[in-house]
Image (tube, rainbow, N blue to C red; front, side, top):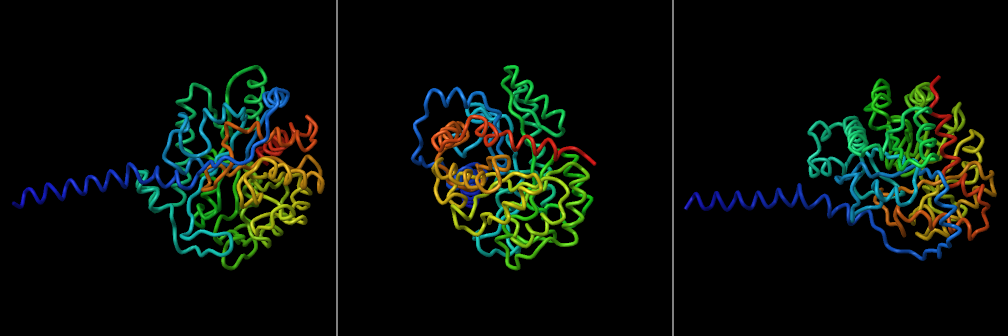
Length: 389
């Protein structure tokens, strides 16, 4: 009698493990990274020709957080290599999300809870990632490097200005290749040690946001409790980033932290994935003064595609936010920052980026300005930001 009970218990535990490790992560992602078709513009043949000529760069996607192959087209999420190729993307920046609070919201979050630990365990990530935020970022770097190595040169990890130039030249010569660059979403992954920034740089990270959904020991978050400014540790990190050749990102940083970063930055600063309060009055979006401050550094604002950034999921709303930045500070300071795979709902995925090009055409942007918005501005700032010294 005891043996059948033990066998039954083993079967139950096995089924529970299969559900937790095999099924649950996919279900979680499917419910968080959704594509719900929005009103999309009718794409003309002329726009398709224009789109095919562009070097497109997107400053933010959270794809590395999830357990699926970058190399295979997925029914989940919004980004993978086949969809980047279909959308004619030249460079995709992949962020490393290391911690998010329970009941995450745009208004106020503490730092005393974490959703990612359970996700890391459920996705059967290496145990070293279960308790270390630094190791989670190093694991994300390994995932991107492994995908690139297995891609047959369809995906390259970009770390230097020369590698970026070679990527663009090869694409101009007809090579079908996409670049991937690494970014950090919040400096909590440094675990309070400046030396860890060098470890992350050595692993390939070339951009870093100072905060995510909660305040940390480097900077206040727009969504934190205190919403403080840049701390003395944060100032040390910024200086080291500029010396190493890492781009400073103010996305999610509090208004005080944004002001502090802009006041002391010596290199172009970006807002990798954002919106503007002038067209979408949400607290995580940039004020006109912040837009002007980023432009004064020579930086770029990446406009997103989700409701929290543009109060819509339509390409027309993205184009409206882009037009506001253009009219305020000039065409050289605006680009794309999708936040694809960042627990957002969008109206299209990476394979359909031609609808953004069409929305800009419909709004009267010139072909030269569209080329800047869709990638030229971001590529210029990245190339400058990757220079060491």
